[in-house]
Length: 379
Ligand code: AHR
Image (tube, rainbow, N blue to C red; front, side):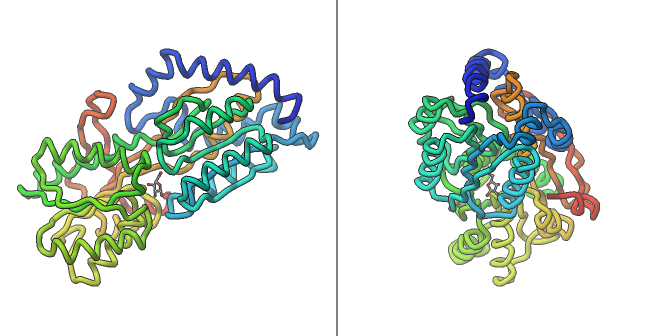
């Protein structure tokens, strides 16, 4: 760690961690709605962060005294992940005074722990982690804390340690709840009285999988839907295709809803259903629900292949930069920041949904009817 930064960082970490233990951050955690952020939404903070390069960072860049950041990324399993990597690499750039050391952990939790330990040994100034799974973190985060290195968590959550300075990501349970509420209202509107659903879940133990399953299952229970099966496709297209091929053998003619926990799994499920001659999407026999809302996913919504797609926003690079700049300037940072995330639909029969979110608040949120301009603007 650069000497001139060290004392500032120690002081800042103390402030940040104290703030994280206090009422305001806990309030932020429990009160933030699905489509709201404790800070500016990503697009706004992208501009703000890019434009507002702090004096400290400018000075550091000019003097060659760069800030070193280690980023332990999940892997490269999806379109979402590519967008996430690009976003972080664009924001934590040399021109912003940052030397970014990037490790693709290829969805291997042990490799991710090793990567973080390597960053600690190197004495980087900050560590950014997108945790593959939500538990098993306390020991290594304690090591980072002992070394005086602030840890920033993005996207997925760490659920068994609070030894990080700040997290920015998605409210995955709200994504699952929104999908459940949409299906309930869509089925009622279409006169569909029986729901037999197959779920292709994401990486087991990731907070994205846990939250989406938890939220959707609340509706399975309250509505008396029949969940025939849930197997992991590991957030990949191949995984989605393999699980769907297996479902088509085991549950032929028994299901009318498929929930894929990300777009790439949906692409694989679509290939499997096409090969089996099963119709899906608008006017089909199977309602297809997905998460992420990447550009290719929204193209499928526009084409009527995916009925509804619940966005998970991967553009956290600018927020990361903003957090680092604030820490550099000795400012407080929020313990949690929720990304703004809209919900997208293929048909215009429903324009909004009202549901009780994970914070216990009744919220009404718009459904975005996808047209070409929506696809063009997607990540
Ligand atoms: O953690 C975010 C999830 O991980 C996205 O839904 C998925 O596409 C990615 O692989």
